[in-house]
Length: 63
Image (cartoon, rainbow, N blue to C red; front, side, top):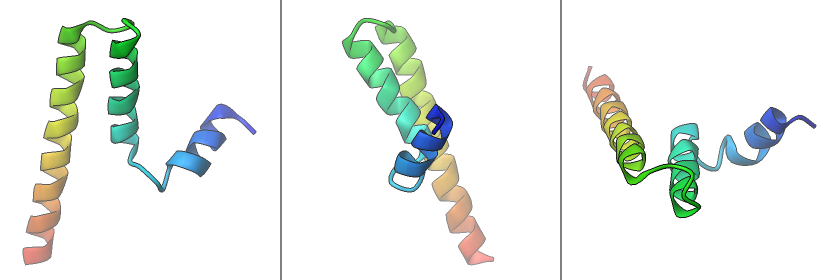
């Protein structure tokens, strides 16, 4: 089983891939693999993409 198959099988339905990136960034911050500034950028993109997705889904339901 490849790494991609493992991730898709165990994490694909449980959590979104965007959240998985956010989680990896947080762990990387803990182990000093990314800086605080880089983590803030990743967190901002994660929050922004989640809001855009929610907005699109709400608009889709209205029409």
